[in-house]
Image (tube, rainbow, N blue to C red; front, side):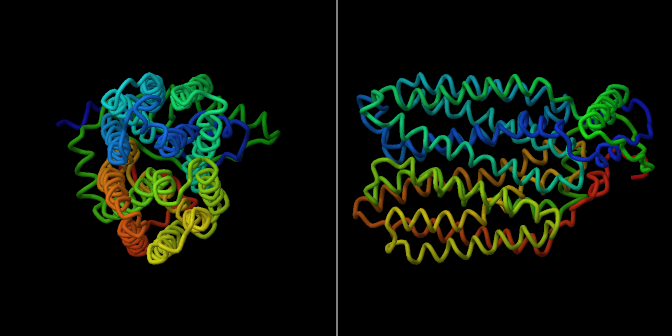
Length: 482
């Protein structure tokens, strides 16, 4: 496939102007408008995990077994993988803004339809559609955020935003405490209302997101440098007004051979030929975190209900979720101060070792101590897992950014996120026959090994990207001096 029609060669200082800006209210608008998608994802995943018991009865639920709940989780992740790949290439081709509006619309449609599920097959189909929208969001949003946030804040912002998944998780957990209370709401309606409320949140985000501009970096590469220049000038005007200070001048420029489209053949050669070490690194990071989180969290509510006698799992899941967000938020500044390599290595290896240790003592836990152990483990793991998305977004050229995020998300999540829920669903069902929670310990051990291997890969192959311009970490494919 051709690399796309070349439209001209320009020299621009847009990347340097974006990176030298101080933090201002305008940047908070970007964080709120784009970053809140992870809250939606956390809400979706937690509602499914918390409502596993509500989905099982024939009358008020959908008559689903533990295995079918695991299958639903796997279908959601499969949709996210395919959505990431499909919308990821469109994001690089047609722009960040067009796609992050479309993907939010797909999510909105999927979650509304889920609330009207009449049988497991309908539910599975709606979970697939919802996952497709969320997967597309990951590709479009991560690329847009990293291209708009100044270099010295990029690490902490990206890690904290990805960690905001757990705000949605905590909210979803507490929401189900109310919605699954039969004294308050008919059990036939509670779980449906929970999904419908996710759609309400998505509508609010849609209105905020309308004010987020297209990435100027994407615009000048695709022959629309005048539009990019206008957007940057508007941002500078707003930042000066908000901070009350003039902006420093910049002298760094980059020369670009513009193209209207970038061919998939060139993107594939970039990933596998030009940056093979970075490709291995991202694969290791995504597989580790995907198996760990999708396996543990998708089925955690079912584990508490099946083995530990917990009828209302919302409070336990909320505690677990708060610790995850706290870890991402509190540790995120260290990714800019200490650096990517030591932080990602440390969070992956330490959380992997602790998860393996928890597996050995699984039979000694009750609901409270298992939740406390999970909170400690995932306080550390959440920052590292969020940094996997940061890594994939930073270490490849701009023309391939969204598709690279999508590719590694899809491959890593397919390996860990689809197999994880299926494995844990099967382990839970088999272990429940003997009422022996230790039967699911093998899942903990697999997750521990994969996380440790991800940490080792970072130590050997990691990129020191802190404080650097995206164009210095990986030169654009269209750079004239390549």
